[in-house]
Length: 177
View 1 (cartoon, helix red, strand yellow):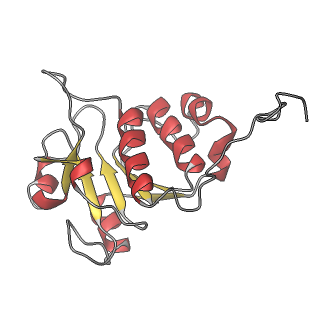
View 2 (cartoon, one colour; view 1 turned 90 degrees about the vertical axis):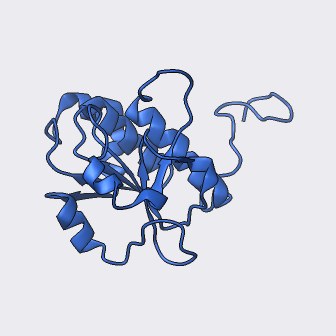
């Protein structure tokens, strides 16, 4: 899977998303400009010691991102890598679509989301998280986790550890290792 952040503004969110990407073996793609520097202490704090394990790609702008990924398809075709756009403005939810193992999911900047000029061209590829009332949006790192884990669930959590272990005790006996 691939997570794309279009002009992220808040270092803590990007750091937390980077940590989620490492935990799920997901690549993180960042499209400039950023509202911070990659060396920002808040980004590093949120990403903890996982940041150096992150598969990170950077792009000068959206056009450069598209140029480096000409294979991307927009929407619900049956084959190929898809690019999905997470937005509060979509008609369909993230649960209405089928994610592939190599798909890309783009999220916009915290203050404005993905530019409507991009969204309007790709209506079938826009997805949203249902919310109650007049709530504008979820925190960006939470939104990424919700949609990414649904995409991974649809792949039966391929290549992810499926059973956890206790640190000191055995599940069966409760005794120490």
